Length: 128
Image (cartoon, rainbow, N blue to C red; front, side):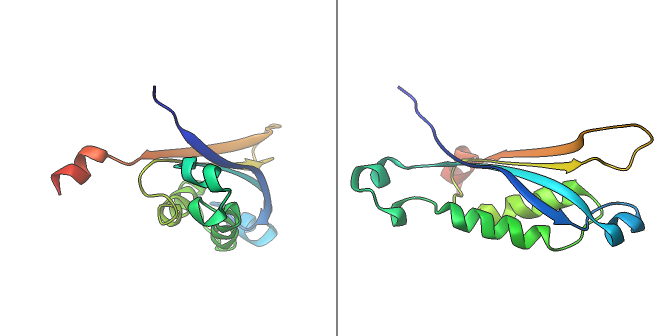
């Protein structure tokens, strides 16, 4: 039997200054971020110990810090968050999804979004 343990923080809401256009980086806008990290929580669940799992406060802190650095592209932002999250769990899948709410387009759009998913390549680790 195969199992996966996934820890997620969904709908983290930030007002931030990301955008390709200068006025977006001046005026700012609303963003939502979802993060999922594959972890190994079985031992933590056995003894109810936070230190044997990933503390979601650490996830939030990383996302909050990265959201405070203005970027032109949400793609750049998502990859920056992803790379920092690898420190917390380098052996499983990590997903980062960023939604820019009400992007400045000619029509009404609820959100633009970008998602990056990375899965550790176990075969690479075996070769090294």
